[in-house]
Length: 117
Image (cartoon, rainbow, N blue to C red):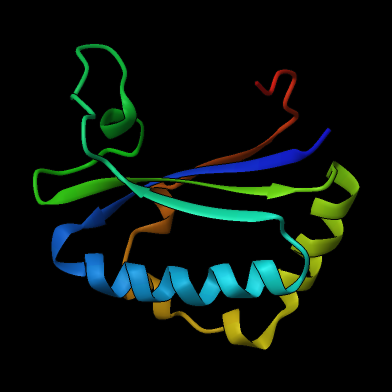
């Protein structure tokens, strides 16, 4: 079965277009190295929970929108190989992203799917 990396980040609303352009570039890089799918989603129905929620998880401010993303790979081994290539890619070595969103508030992790309908 496939393997999935998931991400949640808060992006200032004024930077959404820059984030979309940045994501198009990074998504093409991931796909170029073999990722099966690269998806970015803007929050549309994401309430601020009393105890926990997507906005709380990334400490989203009033002028920010939550972005939920995932990347699908053939397997964990493929993910590890692709990730090492992506992280070494010279197109991603700059700090452009720091002007777009706060990476310190990003949450991410790898997940092994157990059900796909």
